[in-house]
Length: 460
Image (cartoon, rainbow, N blue to C red; front, side, top):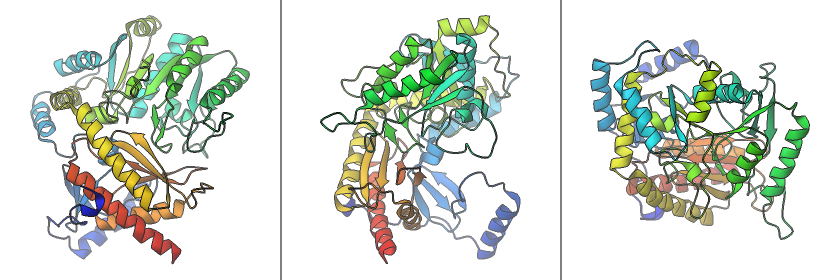
């Protein structure tokens, strides 16, 4: 089904609208009592969610193309997750951090079973920032170094070490970061800063020069490099084929550990169980440390650090310490086991490859018909479109991104636009892995109309 022949653009209401005075009180209370922690809040009161839709207080069903915070990979209210939570919260929910339960050990064993050797040691935590914090802390302890390399455009979290390795936002006004953080450029094929003589993206030269600068800046205390296989908040930028292998070699030549942050790309999101497995014909690149979060809990706060027995042993011998209130919690571990049940039982990696091809084809069709779409990129059900004012100059179109976001929401589609220096507005499109073909087509049709309406509004 094409976007043009998809179902009616606006899903039918399923709930009674909230009284205007109730909504007014809600927003007055929000304005008075909530700390604002990012951009403006979405101007909707969400009452419930089911499958690929959230339902607002005024009775509208809005198609969720962000999977919540890129986390609800099985959609909202998946029956298996609901049943697991009901059972586990009534049986065993939370323990002292030094106590173990069967769901925790089961999940660690099963996660290791989805991964190649030597990744077999698992630490279960709550959030992506927390898992990256633990991974960086472990790398520093094991290597004896303290310097951490990450990509410009990266997002690894808002805790101390994770925030210090984050360059896409949030660096200004907070004083000094952790010492020893070094940045290298993003290998963005759409906006390349190095070209081969025949005009192709020369990421190898870029990487060589980047590590020449790392070597110059380093005090001889390099510990780790942390990267996302697909930069998500950095504009849905895929690392070029071969880049991860070259980066791994750069790290190991210098005694560094390679940490892969697969918060958003793991567990079938990109059409393979893990993005480091690569695309067809690409060498799999097994990291020294892997961090997981968002997708592992399917919307609940569950994260993991996975590493080798050798690295874990060295960390343990040196007194590795990472106690948190919710380390090894049985409730969310049980949910993680259910997530694996569903992904394996429904062969979700195969499903996502098919749906990802359908989504990408629809986005390329939109690019053919909307001059404002400069680039379509991504993998599986993590796709991005970059909006530009002019395809030749690639001048960004941030204002258009804001208008499209607003219009799409009015029409019944929630999407997320990320805006970075030097880029246009980039829409991050990440529907649940359980999304249907009809829902994908509906989202494409709404996006088609929103792009047209917003472009006309901008041109006056």
